[in-house]
Length: 323
Length: 293
Image (cartoon, rainbow over all chains, first blue to last red; front, side, top):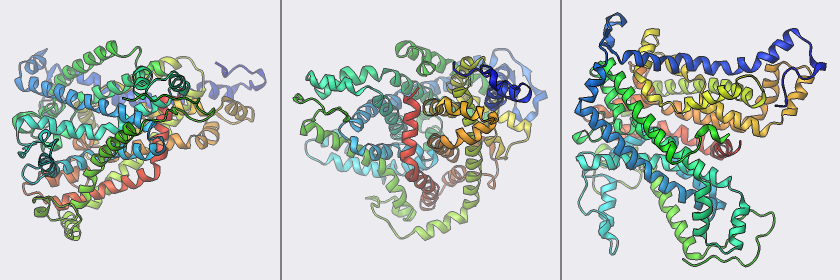
């Protein structure tokens, strides 16, 4: 590196100057690490400890009792836990995959055909991301309403159209009241919220692809599709890895959207009960901190495992490899 | 698909891809983008429309598509049910404190990682990145317990103190400072006898405006919109942030949807204004942060 603090003898004045130069970077980065130790690492370790204790938070720390693996076995034999895990996985997939299938072509279009309006397009698509999930959920709660919701009204109107009408349901769908539709409804909201975010990530990836590649391809007579297929997609791989990892981790921690759309209940047939929601319920309603802690570790294992699989399939060295 | 054969070479210096796309796919792309944009904006539109209608108007067939005349009553009903402005103030207080402190500490740390060479730099920066991947919501139970032990339940500091710095912020600032500020500038200031913190304050801070705008907006928005954290920390109506307060309206059996929509709209409007003012910067800052380096 160019600037080791001690290189230039002319500026070696010793004492305070020397001292502050040498330790300044450590002092500058210390706030983050202090905060992380206290509010990041310590809770994780405490959570691990807690997961082996039987404890009701209301009774004070003295009432903890070591129970070995019982909290874990309790969870693993609890059908609701498994259902919540299944719901989470289905929701993560149902909301995660379409985000990318939509965002990649959108970003490609925004960078190419629509370059002049790129900022406008990106800003519009990014709008949902900056809006409070409570606001979003409240709005969608009314839009999804069974008898009088805008979504059903629109779908029914579309089903009356010639040719494409068959694609849309003629019957009103009880989005949030019927087991089969709770997950698609939640997934729709999540997709709506995050497409713009992913589009922005992909846009940044596309913009970092050297233009000469496209020029050369054009000269060789490659079609737009071929350019997309053989230049854009392969070179987007690193950013795709980041985006998919973020979606995966986010999707498996889904809480706010299902919580508010189902009014905290998990919805019809508990189809909208995600693991984080169940964990929150175990802690806040059943006040069973140990079981909730064990649940979070089980979910952590799932998230960690899937991230690893994703890493193997997709990426080389993950986030750190990009700098 | 027709081939987009390009016969002439792209003009030098212009920004390709210069392939003249055939009219039909081009039109298709426009239509799809427009449809997507319409679907993206529609919920916002309905939020504002619903805020001006009575509950029974909102749930009728067909649903109202244009603004009504009930905004005043909805607003009155909102204030009757909630200390709404108090909640909004709580949100603002929390968001401003979080944003200001995050900007300060993340820029400081980002500067250290970008401009200094020190022992352990790579490892420590790797640690920062690793914390990005730790699923934060998994920590909610111990987080709640720690705050209880500290006596910080119902205190805004339970949320802004842990939020004073973020791994994402450090990452963003490091990328920006490393790629846009020449090291010679720092060296020059050092030769002029500036202290290390003085260099940061007088040289670095003034030059990191765009990245700070991005990080500031993202942090502000996240704090303003936060739900799970406040849900765990705040227990009384006086300390509720706006999202929490609005949610209590929804859980009432006979929800006044007009009032609720009015409250929701009032919570979203500040962000929309902020976004309109800063969206260009935000998008550029984010894309710069993630491509350079």
